Image (cartoon, rainbow, N blue to C red; front, side):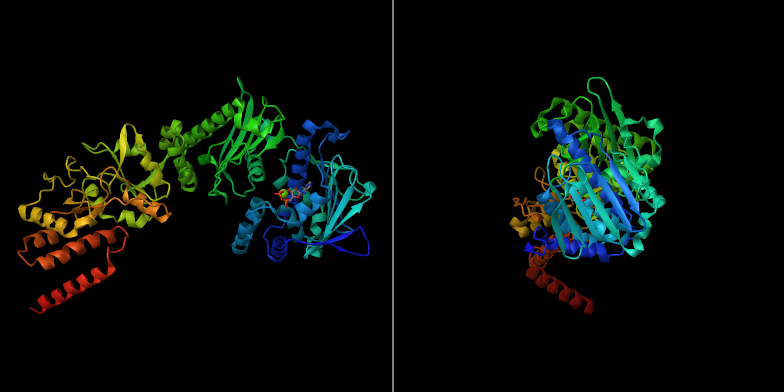
Length: 634
Ligand code: ADP
Ligand code: MG
């Protein structure tokens, strides 16, 4: 929106509605940490320098005789002003309006929803993650003037706003603008005047921006000489022994836009066929966009310390939580989009970095199971995607995988190596039960026969579990088998209580009863048979051999994908008192038919489903209860 004012050249514009809302949130929320605004402005200044460096590869004239990137912070306590200036790419008129008047990002809506819901302590993290950084200036300033001179352009422009819904854009004299780049002047609020104190700025820069790849200097007061606060040397070029843990943490925070501690740091230099350096981190907290549909790796690609792109997808989808950089010495600086996709050098780098991250995770798992367990808790569901997506590394990923199981208190996790070490006599498979609800699968009747034999069953309750198990993985030559599918084949494995009889035998009456149930249920089930997986419960449902497991079927149905539902098998516990007494009952087929349907419904309910036909179910149940009441009266 534009209207004409007294000064014909000044445009008055209104912020896009989203920006206004965001600004309102910025100004009116109580942040625990307003310092983040400086990190955001420095990061923008550094981005601008890096973009210039990149554009200058194709067009060296853009640099002129001022090739060295720099960021200068100037303080003026008397005027209560803080200025952040860079000699980066700069913005022209349209770029100013676009970048500082709108929010182009689709993630912003989500951001604002989260910001409104977030605790104050999380807000700062959210600001960084969602890239709405510039507007954070209005947390400390009641007016912000941005003067910018686009590299290669003859004009300079000034953007100005009090953050209350409107802003102005006007041309300015080139002499009062930076020769190239952007100057952001914050007119600080009364309670933000400490941001004109040198030690304060120094502290924030060291804590948050010490590792931006552009040198930062400070001018303490008007007329003073600039002094250097940070040298802009890329941390990753130093050797590991020279770097302090807190330097790694700072760097991690600035590259990841997260405020947690890295849970694992992977720093190495590859020499030989391809020369490159990687500095990558596994966060300790989940990044907010971990489950974005794109599932893209956010590792940044540098070539000879020049930032090239954050879109090179250096790591596979299942390592998308890893944050950091790769700096190649061999790739050309002018790396086109197409080359990023096809470059054999980049392919080799990706392979090597992926392998290194996985092997460092493996090492951590061996040396510090507890620390590794925390990583797995956060990122296990993501890593498990690799079991079906990365055939080549399936074994490595299965080795890294940790599972809850019936052999452990639900807090601790088991590795497959531990599982295989605990195999019982005659046990040939790795058993699992999959479902969405941990408590429900743990209480599932299907586990009874396994518990009675001390056979460990993995409890899989991540959505992704339903997927990878269908890819027929095996570990150490042992296939994975669902305890809710097919015959359990448990008879060969001895019971824990040493009773010799492990094969459930049905007497003649029970065999007849089973045939009766099958006839009664007709099409509802594909079979009714004696179970060897039940000890306490009377019945359970299992999926027939070959088809999808029942939990996968439900998952697919829930996600709207039609699957031809495989009719389940009803398994009956031939030793259960309910079954034997029903079987012993002569005649009264009407009653036995009710019982057959109710047993089937019971099995469905145990699986977390509803009775097959709610109306018929309630009629049968009512009949049964009144019969019980009759016989109780004698
Ligand atoms: P982000 O940095 O995540 O893109 P910001 O809100 O921090 O989001 O900045 C918005 C946009 O404003 C940037 O993408 C950039 O185009 C522009 N911008 C901000 N500061 C500068 C600057 N110092 N030099 C050039 N462009 C800038
Ligand atoms: Mg920014």
